[in-house]
Length: 292
Image (cartoon, rainbow, N blue to C red; front, top):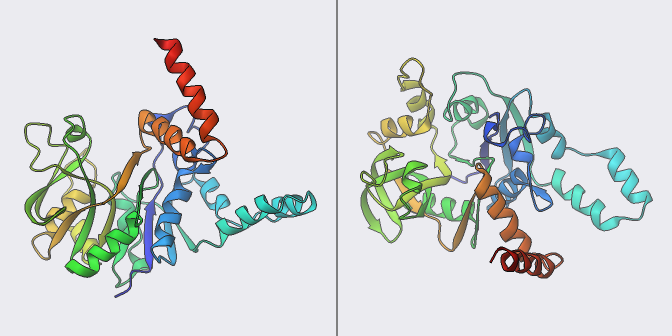
């Protein structure tokens, strides 16, 4: 079955970026001159996704505005002869069919997935986080979709890492590596630490689920004070169907949910720009020389 829909959870408060996110969603923080969430949407659309379901909160109206038609701005750009900028903002609204859901339910990253249940229906679907991005060729979403079609099971986007610090930040897949960069998951271990990491495949960015994930989320027993997280649901789903962790090949992971990762992404993407890269590189060289 063709995967047509993607869910992007985007209801968090972005507390790690306060005060910048006091009045602006973290997903709208710019990478050079384009918000993070637009990179995420473009990645999905490049892979053939038609419907983008964004799960938001009361403080995320600017996300909806960004993907809307800004008539007044279009008129001003047209009158000013700024045709290139006009075409750029017109493309944003035409990327996909956008559907917005207000998040409700317990705290945790499984809640926005469950909130999309009625919109998804009986179809497999893609989940992308609104504050991270993997630049890859083919794109991350296409690699995940191709893996889902080949393996016939839920797919978790992963990167290889042997960094001890990463074992404290991400979930890691445990199981047999059935082919290069593919683990048939027996268990997912959240933030195992360097001594308990079962593999070097960290599940970080992009997921494909069958609708069975909704029953699994609803079956999770959440202890008082804990969050409803999708990894707990996946460990239930594993008992009913195969789940695979798949390494995203030829990709660079940008974790824009933390300050250092966000700064690194801006620098690296800026260096790739023909209009900015040479001058930015020269500036960085001067800074390095001054620090020595």
